[in-house]
Length: 66
Image (cartoon, rainbow, N blue to C red; front, side, top):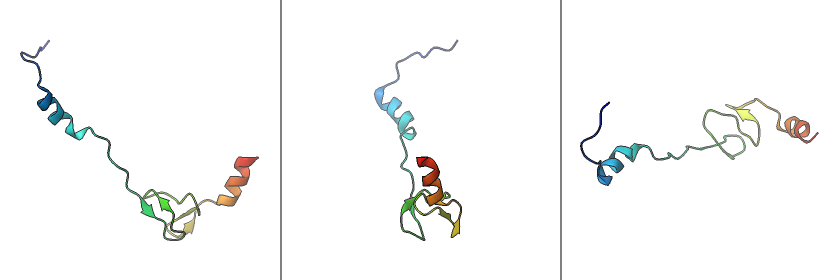
């Protein structure tokens, strides 16, 4: 089994791990209601995706409450 001859320095270790950081998520504004939403997904406040109603929010909230 391979064993390193020398200890990896903190600088070299941090340079190797520089790409492992958490990336921020991109967000978009909904064209219909102006709420913040994730791209390529329906709006959770109005239920539309690309101008079409995908989910009826009022019915979904009523079903969730009961």
